[in-house]
View 1: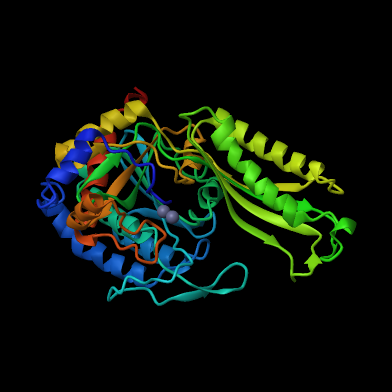
View 2: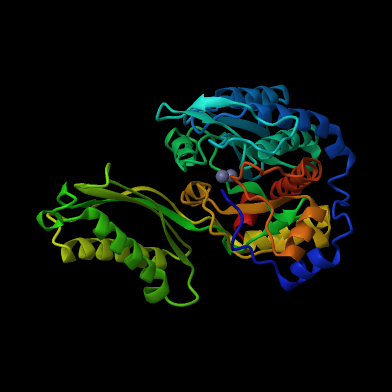
Length: 447
Ligand SMILES: [Zn+2]
Ligand SMILES: [Zn+2]
């Protein structure tokens, strides 16, 4: 996930960040509580280890084993290899609701440039057989460290909750197929089906010590398209004997820009990006084909449908206008739905977060144009709560805002959360949310 971009703080939030530039925001009671302090050293050690030893999507073998060992030693009933490298850890504690808490396991093919003493130097083979650098550039290492701390606190304080806690380590979030892989491997049939699913994501949009809640649609629908335009190749000096797919591709790219600017209703959010064009081998050869790679982001299902239909219409029409020998091939090879935060649940969980972290550290935010396969769990009819965890050094964030710049976003080679306060806060926030949910009847969660 890439939680930057569309973040809209409430006016209060913006004022707060600016007006408190010099004041450390990391001053909450729960994050500094004895129970968090007690588990922090082990969580931090795990963070350093996992950060230094990242693994690519679908290959999280060592990472999963490290988590499974920790959960087992805490008394959880652990199953490994669910949907590939997925880990399921269950603790039953009397009657009550079933709550799922999720972390991702995977890292990214990014070369770390943070200069940190524990920076990753790992290289691995990607699925295409290429040697790539690997880095936890999305903060999933911090999510894992937090979840292990949370798991320890919940295991040590069974008098504070009742019900069933399911903690999962999900592979392959970055390739948006790991959640579905775990579901297809029986996550909700071999194990108890949760009444609520919870997750968090760290990012530099908020200061470490803070959390953000988006009631309703939180992240965007994401669709990946591969379009191959079929022309007719030939000599570059005799274009009259060819149908040039590069010219069609160029016209198509420009025409696609009119979808958001001319077709989508003003005020509705939509993004159509052509991330690559591939065609040709030599300057005096007109190739047979040209390929375009697109990412499409939308919030509303009706806008998604409209944008995808417009892409097909425009792509076909441009090829027809040029006299292409056949229509383009449009391969819709990846898609994921928006994450929808149950609004009543979000309002309800705001209260324990505010009690735990301080009212001034909990923000209501607008949606992100990032995407997340956490939506796959919600598509199974499970209400969800996905919240954001501040990762930015408070002073650096205030400075960046004052200068109109941005701190490195997730997926950047420079992404480096302010670990100490962010990890303390992540643990405190997860515990607060779980204790709230695990102190109700299952029916109460649907209210
Ligand atoms: Zn990511
Ligand atoms: Zn992520």
